[in-house]
Image 1 (cartoon, rainbow, N blue to C red):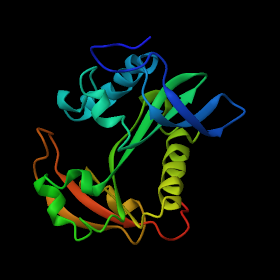
Image 2 (cartoon, rainbow, N blue to C red; image 1 turned 60 degrees about the horizontal axis):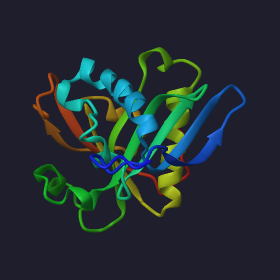
Image 3 (cartoon, rainbow, N blue to C red; image 1 turned 180 degrees about the horizontal axis):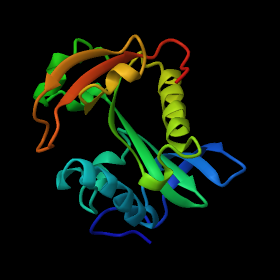
Length: 193
């Protein structure tokens, strides 16, 4: 049944990318359905605690991030969503001032990681976060992108790989309480972490 106010179908359309024996599964979302919205909003609460209310997904904003122009992956454990990562071609942000610091804007070779979040009780446990990130990076590489970019708390990007570079530091980032850095990481090599 179609929800007229949101234009969202009842059930999400996904492709299972990885399916573990322990109830852990990673899916690429082709079309978000109303059946997954409340769980995704619940997961986004992790970002609210850390940054601000503006980081929370809502019923009105969810289709901005889960649509045909994005690469949203969700992680499920025992059929419940425990995390997600969303990639977006950099050119989608061409009207954003920060995107113009990236020399690859207009080259169509870069994916911007818009969000990467895992519920707190699954962080640093069972390799769920690492598996979600690794599958996302490999999927992006197979789509012939050469770079991954994103904003993260200052100092974190240096842990991604020795080839990761800080493009720009933002002392304030959309009402967040911490400084952020815009990073670029080549992914044309085999992904190892």
